[in-house]
Length: 300
Ligand code: AMP
Image 1 (tube, helix red, strand yellow):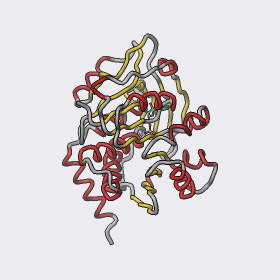
Image 2 (cartoon, protein in one colour):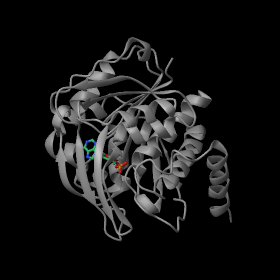
Image 3 (cartoon, helix red, strand yellow):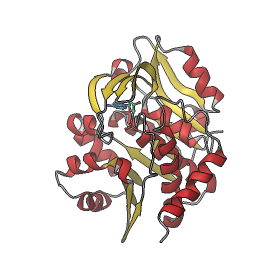
């Protein structure tokens, strides 16, 4: 039984930051999001890998309690992303995106995922997102993410997706790019007019804004001293957010605010090391302690 279905990429990432460099490590939007969601609930991935994908990474996901039945292994190479960050780590610079097996991926959602109530369509081809959504039986909450690559290359398909989900989560630059506006508040409101009930705009080390009908919630980011690699912060934020909603079975605006803080807490841990190196070590107590620290830093 799976509580949260996460569709997205399973990747081999090569990343350089001012604090180090890694090559062909485990990454991908579905990986970060499902590991974060599994802190609170049972997650299952829908994605694709190539024959070159290291077995140890699949074993790692299983050891984290993640259902990997929905990861199809196809002939060809795994999706790869290469990028770097300068001191402004809010800005990821893409050096190379190789879609490989993702380019022809036709997702099949396993039967045992189809009754899941919480769906996160993480950053991937919007046509893949739509195909996954259509196979779900009766979801209670559908959330999606995207990035500049898809806004540039598949805006029409992306628009159709946005009109069909409950929650949109994007970063500030993507929100501006989609609506061609300098104002993220205006962009947030414009997303709401397209249909979603909530829109979360992530601002990296400056926190996140959540827009719902008539209200705006401003969450801080955890003031992290040792930032090593922000890759996957957005995905682990979203995974933590939806994992908390699934665990509590409460999608009220009040509980969504708590979910934003849990998501932010997990994302802050993720940025302390490369790949999944930090997330694999943290406990639920660590997350709750950081949640309390969030309360403390905004109390005045
Ligand atoms: P983020 O949470 O935004 O930092 O996402 C980082 C992850 O996104 C990396 O592990 C990449 O493998 C993955 N990624 C990069 N480009 C794309 C893309 N065009 N579509 C889907 N996933 C991507």
